[in-house]
Amino acid sequence: QKEVEQNSGPLSVPEGAIASLNCTYSDQGSQSFFWYRQYSGKSPELIMFIYSNGDKEDGRFTAQLNKASQYVSLLIRDSQPSDSATYLCAVNAGDYKLSFGAGTTVTVRA
Amino acid sequence: DAGITQSPRYKITETGRQVTLMCHQTWSHSYMFWYRQDLGHGLRLIYYSAAADITDKGEVPDGYVVSRSKTENFPLTLESATRSQTSVYFCASSDPDNPPDNEQFFGPGTRLTVL
Image 1 (cartoon, helix red, strand yellow):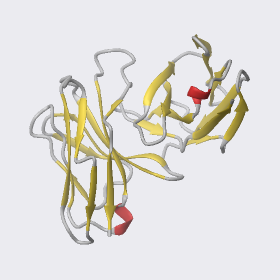
Image 2 (image 1 turned 90 degrees about the vertical axis):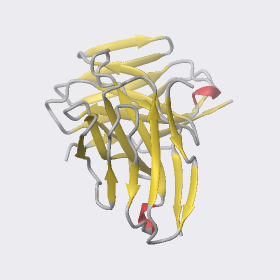
Image 3 (image 1 turned 60 degrees about the vertical axis):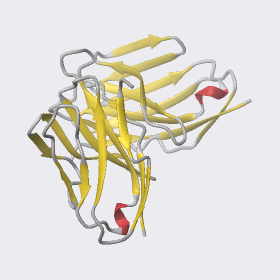
């Protein structure tokens, strides 16, 4: 069973601050990593993906990957109230399947 | 409308009844997936399909049946619903030929309550 663990929430941050989300995975062979955002009552949507060690930036979002430590993180800079959502970490699990973490709920305080 | 749709969006049924959840996508994606989402468990894969007439079990397949006679449709059937199958069900699809090849696109979900 491939496991994906996310830091327990909820995470509350003030508007304008950095939100830091962490995810660890058990399968050393995993090659691709995804962050999905899910608003309450809605379906997940992809916001970031990363394949290589290091950082990948897209607007206010930065994904960080360390395969040696089996660790992937998501930073949200200049957090906005619209960033309040649950963030799901997902890791490829073979045959185009994904294993998802339980999610971390982020609340941005105005 | 283009995209991935699910029906019904809400369903209340009784224990022991058969229920079918529908999923339809217009992208001709080869892969389709069914998940259930429960508090504290995230998304758990029930079944998936790599193409028409090819299906395989996921993490939690017991009590569910799938079929895929056409690329665009992937129905999920609960043969005899139980209270433990009360959940939100998401269908997803992906296209391995377009990067990122593991990206999955999700339908709006079906909220199922089994009384």
